[in-house]
Image (cartoon, rainbow, N blue to C red; front, side, top):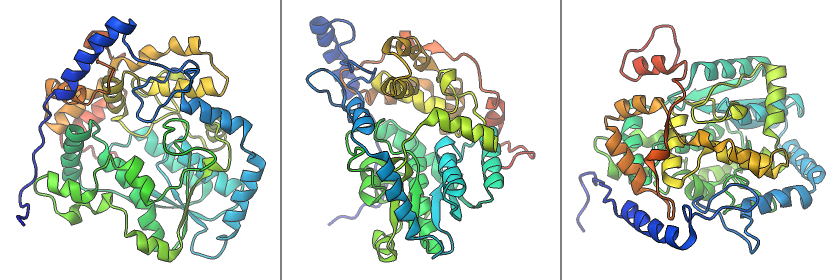
Amino acid sequence: MTRQTQPIPFQPLGVIARRSREMAERAKHLEGEDGVRRCKKCLIPETEQTVTFDDEGVCNMCAVARERDEDIDWDARQQEFQDIVEQYRGKYRYDAIVPFSGGKDSAWVAYTLVKKYGLKILLATFDSHFRRPLHLENIERVVRALGCDHVTFKANDDVIKKTMLESLRRRGDFCWFCHTGVVATPFKVALMYKVPLIIWGEPGTEQSGGYYNYKTKTPPDERWFNRQINLSINAEDMQGFVDGVEMRDLEPFQLPPWEDLMNMGVTSIHLGDYIKWNAPLQYEILNKELGWQMAEVENLHPRYHYEKVECFLQGTRDYLRYIKRGYSRTVQRANLDIRNGVMSRDEAEEMIHYDAQRPASLDVVLDYLGIDEDEFNAIAEDHQVYPHVHDPDKVRAAQRKLDDQPLWERLLSGDVPSDIDQ
């Protein structure tokens, strides 16, 4: 058997983009407009990776939301959660590990566990490498106000850059390093401190509803990691794809041996499977009680500026989804409001133009990755999901640069300011 000694180069062939264009022309002829099917209740299109529709044209995520409101006994779920935490209270160095990005969801978990349940928790953070200044302030506010212990893991910039470019080309998503690092870190911290209970935040049940639901819950385990988190690329794959990277360089992006976690008796759960999630209300409480602040996010309606405030690259990542699937985060958040009965479909449709913006941060990302916009667009279009076809003429220029963009232009060019701790 011949052993591979060189990384495997990857070059998009344009086949998917070409087929999508051809099929879309047929769809327009047969169906009119863009030929993309959408839920009759919310705005989710058929290009979402796990969507299905019933005979009435309603998507499975709307069905899950109905199940959440009509079939789940949340009082019983809360008691179930109470029973779980009591099994661990006071028996270990910490009662629980909380995966902590510092965003609204993980801040809410920390707040709930400390204020409502009186647990001693350890916050475990994977440094997403592009953390915005206001986000770092939010982390400081939460940690200080709740009196939590906190550990942070940061990975190598050169390795991150290489994996970003590779996962962009292969999966149309440059965030492989962050997806995997964010999930792997809390499990490693749990092993390090011998704390077997890990409590995550909101399950993705209503945002990507094909794998789990409120009845089955969303178990954050090895299968979940490989099914939903790592883009079907594990660290061994990535080591074979990129040059100049050893397996130990990819340690931040690997789960620890699962048998070690099983031997420790790890229990990993989502708080949102036991306590009904309400992001707008939770933001208001976090703001009032802890001083947690929202921030402008590119390509996102101001109504949702409590969402994804952590990362400077968020606007460009959401723009990638818009090119590939024809919708992005404003539509996703508006769909949740529709399902929660606080917004009509017509009202949501008036907001969706926010998704169709070229973010100013794209220029910084392109410079950091060493590619031009033509290559970026070609990669993104080659990952289009049929029957969507991206129309560049529908894209508007960014409303403006984020206030922290000048900082990132300097930082990612190698000019590290002395007055910021990144």
